[in-house]
Length: 353
Image (cartoon, rainbow, N blue to C red; front, side):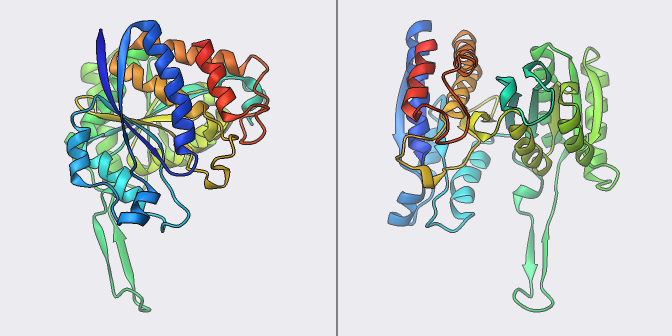
């Protein structure tokens, strides 16, 4: 029997609650499809930071390297200044483990959850491949004359060709494997960001022409992309983009699929350890009330299984999520308005697996 070691970080707020529901689905799937999941739980998050001053120690990174995957609930604590946990835990793990792809499937499960007029599940079904370790988020830059009238701050979008190429290769391979429209749309702003933009445009065309003649090449400026997401989401198949633009457009993508309650993502190292999470925050005001939507976490668990190679189990979770949402039992995706509690939704989907 195959066995996988999973690091679990419940995190802050409602993170532990949605994590518990995801594990229910994982346990049913692993039993049904004949593999074993061994969980190691970690308490990294706001409470630990407030108690010890520690975010994510180097020793934890060393332990994570021995795992097959990491499953994360949510990070964010109302008593911790914004940025400390995000940089100290999320970005540290992402960079240290070289999780250079952020993978965001965008899928509308049922028509009534989409805020766009006349759009159905067949119209909202695409994937965003976001470069995850380069660009502005590397923090290259600085501040001079801080707190004076002449203060200057810089933060630089910096990309090397190897970083762009490995992201582009993942995206092309994904478009080929997905085997739907077989189209890869590059999203950038090459008309203004003429250096970085030109690098991405050339990498897209050169790799596509050379290695992927079966994949159609497409391009959007990022501002145009936000418009087309709303007007014609059915156009898209796989999107590839740099870090900052990807961060922005995936939130817009989340709302057209029904909101952060169903938006799942993965921080992927195709050759190493990847981390999976629901895209919503820790929602501290709902902590312990059994009202938070766990579907994004359950979908993230399915993504994790797919990346581990347990494709049939992943498909079973996706089918269970779709079926449960269309059963009429879940009234809304919004916290407190689902018509069921967090644990009930988790039980419903686990039973459907």
